[in-house]
Amino acid sequence: MQGSSNRRGSALVFALITSIILMAMVGALSTVAAKESEVLSGTRELEGARLITEAGLNLVVEDYQKDGVAPPQDWYVNPQDFGNGTFQIVADTNLGGVFQRRLIEIEGVNDRSTWGIEAVIGPVVKPLWDSAIQANADITLQRHPRVDSFDSRIAPYNPMNPNDKGDIKGNGDLLLVNNSSVLGDVEVFGDLNVDGSSSVSGSSIGNGDSVPLDSVDPLVAQMVTDLSATNDNGTLNPAIVTMIGSDPSITLPNNRTAFIGAGDYYLHSMTTSMRSNLVFDTRSGPIRIVVHTDDVSIGRNSYFIVWGDHPVHIYMSGMNKFEMSNLSGVLNTSADASLFQVVINSNDPGGPRFQMGQFTTFYGTVWAPEANIELLQYSSVYGAIIGDEVLVSNYSFVHFDEALATGEWILIPDSYRIYFKRRRI
Picture 1 (tube, rainbow, N blue to C red):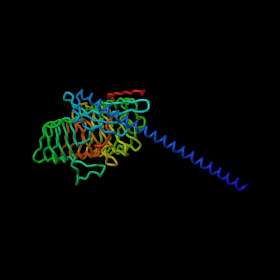
Picture 2: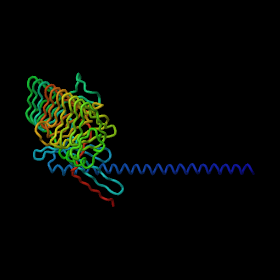
Picture 3: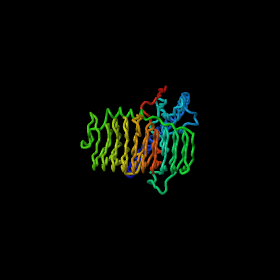
Picture 4: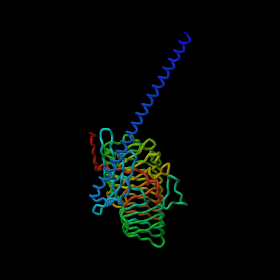
């Protein structure tokens, strides 16, 4: 009798254990099923968002074309699906002979309660860095200059083996004389004049297509508004600051090295004297500087140095100039042209707004579609330049960094926005 009771007790324990395991399995399967249902629901919502966005894109493009956008085959970039219900498309517009580049970005909304689209249309802030030199007016290369390219993602510039993507584009005339050399393609809206001693390795087109180069004035004006109101001027080293009214001016004396940390600054001017180094420490973040009245001047044998992986952007908003004295430079620790950019507005003080003296080196980009640019004797740019009139002379060089062609498009603050949502019934 006792043995039979023990067997019944063992069977009961076994049955309880089995029931517990089965209940756990059922619970796990229920969780998996719920998760799969949630995933499928999310997938349906994302696909719905994509379809809504694509339909919205077609509607916005159709409506926008009525206002003068080029035909669909002339859109600059095909719609890009970013995989999360967001599309972008870039268009070149020609309104009354004025060429501008526009970005349309559309995001779909499709969840359990609402659906709809949000469309943003506005001028593109980021220029298209696809050429060594772009200009609104005339471009002149004279007395042994050279334009070529390299890719900083692969290797530093090698003068013995340059790449041939040093393209030139312009809306005026292009003059190549006195042993000028271009390793790349050239195309200008005006006349193309190449003398017998000069050469172009790629295609040469005169009286061709124009280049849409938007004004940077809205961007510079926005930076002035933002940085004049909120900035990090109080963190500047007092030893290098001279107050001009209520605004600081950075003045670095001879034989000095000083540092500027990550942040935003609103300055009257920025000057280094002989054999001085101004180090932009971007290891912890980017640096944005508005210089609103006087010049940015790098003295003889002096350097601006970017230390870190974040960029430095300098916005010139007055009747001022960016000048590099002989034997000066703008350098960084990785030879990356995207780490330094000078943006110059349309004010005209007379003469060039960006000028490089003899034996100068500049790693970066100059974005000044309404300002004149001059590279004098033995000047070297590793990056790209956009200007109004551009002069490259006397053994000066522009080495286009092909890595600049990557990057995202962004909008200026006065973008036009369309937005609607509809609640599900």
